[in-house]
Length: 484
Image 1 (tube, rainbow, N blue to C red):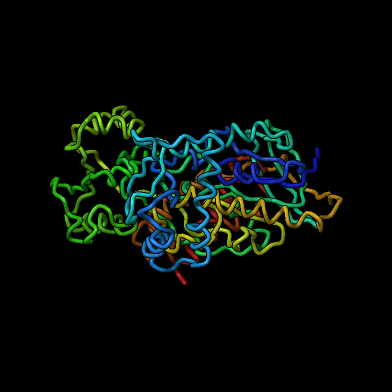
Image 2 (cartoon, rainbow, N blue to C red; image 1 turned 45 degrees about the vertical axis):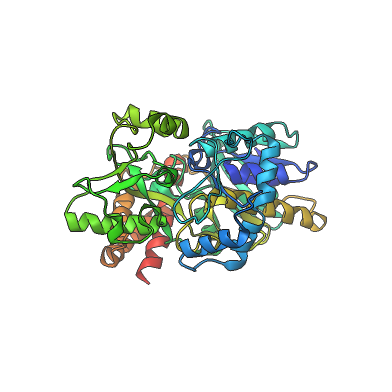
């Protein structure tokens, strides 16, 4: 089965949904959603979305500077300026769509503070901002008659054609091909390439793999952010995140002796940027020969904490910890990707009419370390840019669609067990917070072998194969960057 669309969006997080909303209503648009619609990294975002909007004591210059400092001045300054200067219009747009940010008693928006920010500029919906934004965007997308949504549809492969792009998909054991003139990759992060991550189950780097295989430029994929305060429960691969905003409200970091230690590493203490805090924890861990660390905000009013962090409070109670009464065990964990599919200011990749937005993209705004709560903003600003650029190109768009052939290899063997597990172990050992170049070099050789096996083995194309190939490709690119 083959169907044709003007635009195909791969991914249903904030970037994918907002792109659909900003595309012209006469275009035929398809959103391909890998699993259920609610499962995406965007919906897991707790802290909020940063932006200078009706903020008399703040400025875009301050926001820009904080972003550059956090990113170690490795940022693309033009992209950063675009991000901070256009924040207000996209905040206003999503508010008009129905996003309900918390307000003060006087009716003004409540803005919180997070690590690396010099001003209170984080708009939030309690501690579940991502879910509020994505659910609201999805409600709006569902009203668009020109947009189709294919849920639980795995993209197995993407090919470039003479008239655009084709996606080969698998849904309910049925393979389909969808053709388009323009494609937006909004496939999220790579967290599942690590043993422990805050990312959702679908974060296997599929879009990055597709783009890489088509020859698109990938940049700074080794720029991986490790969140310093993931709940320290090493029994599950997906680690529950304790938001940066908890430290923004005054939480202390404690070592195994229940003593504060950040003053030994950075004058900003607990409000230093994430990479600094994560590095500090690892150095303190080596110093104390212990991985026991805690986050403590129990000295604050309990009613305030329950109201400010209702989701975090309930999640921790389920794990046997009361945030209002005791320190909570934490440790750094893979969280976010700053590199990705390299794009210009229009979110277009190095391949014409192929766009990337959100975490899978590399706009350059984050530099070497993402400033807290800039990710949702980046997803909105640059997915809108993609939609606007597509709109400008419509007059030169071809009218027909080239048909391409894909193979599912359904009569071939399934991939062997263990490739993903081995790759995760390699990445956890060689590129966690403070990279180990010797381990990375050894790991790269093994990952290269696994990748060659997957590419040449002629395996059955199913979810296990697609995700394994994506994870191994991501690990291959990262470790290649590290050992250069």
